[in-house]
Length: 557
Image 1 (tube, rainbow, N blue to C red):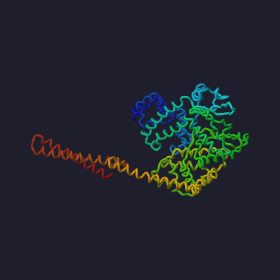
Image 2: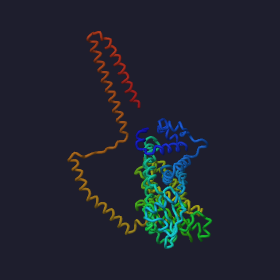
Image 3: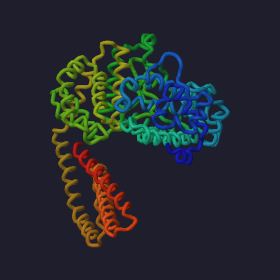
Image 4: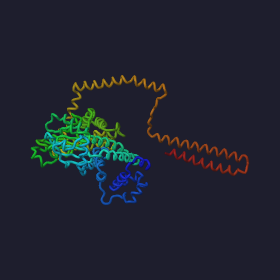
């Protein structure tokens, strides 16, 4: 391991040692041993302090140990685990299920420190800005705390305030996390499938969005616009005059967790109706609005009154392009029609990889899945189970879902699990099927066909305009001798090794010939060095035999 390179970039060596110690404590010492870390100086120091000892007692599953380690490492790593829980295609479904239980709950920061954020953002304290402000937070997470307050016009609001210094801590942890990911990617062979640096980069993009509450405010406004005509869904309104990058003020929702079945009677609601409407809402988000809540767990979905749902906490949201939604519809249609080739094509549209290592093997496995499993799973309304099985096939074939699709599948699975808790007889398929059919039929409407034709015509026109410029540039580079070709060869190292062996043999043959000639000349002059000439012949004979044996042995392979 290149400790010097790691040391040059690691700002907080103490934090790095802590991470190593915590992972070893929870049974991941073999990871460092395989990476060569176990024999280095840092490991010797930690081992001398008994900080790299394997955990005692009964061994838990990998997912349980990883969840415990991330929880101990703190809020940034808890959030990393939550992001990984949305990627069963990378880490497998069992580990993703285990990491989904991670809770981002921390001890609340004293209000005096939180109030400085409000003062810096709006120039006044909470007593001036609000008619009432409850200084005890209703929720406390690693990045922010949420308080209940009342505006001067009597409106009750929820105020989400970023923790001071949170961004600095997050950026420091992200830098260290990226360096550790690069090290794991370079030294642990099994990690090449997961691509640790790419996972950290995806996580960094997600958490940096959460650090800017302006982004969440804009997302909330888009959701409110999308659900204006839906009477069974409430989206809180944002109060922009009391919102900044570090502070978000929105309507207070008088509701309870959607899974609190004991509260349904008091709120004049029916659990089965709420379950169906929750699934309807998510399908609308995906297939009509192309903007969806990516984490609709019971804490983020509240029951108000009269079967009405309220979605909160839009820090994790996903966006889909029209072609993305079309690919999802094609996937379901292919499963309905038992068309394995179309199913594979649709699946590949959902992945970050353009082609599987073995397409024929993938098609064969998808065919078996459709023939023997998919129909029975979908006909029983267990869409989440079908998704889990399909993602397992992708993972087996080293295919990774594009991040936006992993968020979507996580959202679909979560809302179905919550729905089945409310109504064990919930069948997601009749809710999902009309949206898929409408999307497929919309492609053949005259207006959409004209729109698609115009889009294709514009693309061809743009290409025709660009071709002369590209040809001119190409010819200019060719004329000036600046043309460069980048070639990629598979297994080129084998050719290099073959050339290296051949050149070594040629060199040895030349040396043998030179020894023979030199020895012959020494013997021919009948000097006192005649014995040296005989020795040269013997050496040349030995080298020649060795050369012949090596050539014959190489031909056997």
